[in-house]
Image 1 (spheres, rainbow, N blue to C red):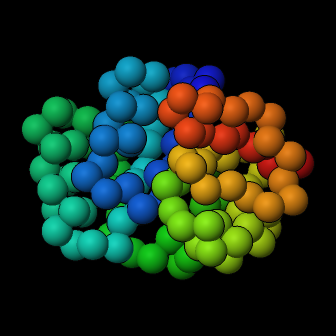
Image 2: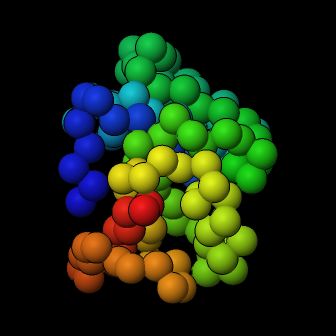
Length: 129
């Protein structure tokens, strides 16, 4: 949906087991950064990245995405709660450059103009202005 490619830097906020960042690197040849607060999921993700020889392309950060600089991202993906999206809005607007694509699974951004929607996958894409 986001049109990811080799020139993109994909950030997955709440990256869980790392499948989004791994797929971004393997299928779309993008650089990718996963941000995850659960240390066990971070370790698992890092192990997968290592075993798939993606260490130069994928980085998994242990931490709170509210405290991570997102300014290098060209694409941000997330599957968070509606309330978390609301709290994240000002950070995304402040840190992301115009043209950065934000893809959210299920939960939306109130007041933002959706540029694309995949109803089957429950994905919405927004572009930072």
